[in-house]
Length: 110
Image (cartoon, rainbow, N blue to C red; front, top):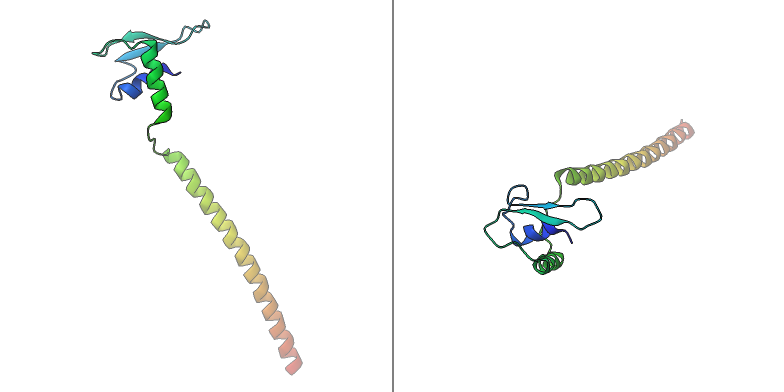
């Protein structure tokens, strides 16, 4: 369970740097609420677990990251460019074949 995310689920307008602080001392114990400045009772472990479960069932919509979107668009553009280059090469080869055929036909008729 992520205590901070559970609290933010219940209090979405709260600021985790001012309204509450979750701390983990790194000594093998779990995280805990070190500071609580919201105008509400400090949540119990059971409340936090319930909020966490609700959050897992109903994750908030998070728009795609701009950099990720740009990377996807660039990838699509590179693929399209590669496909166009391959098509251009095939058309160039076909045009060369037509030109050679025409030249050979001209040579036969000359």
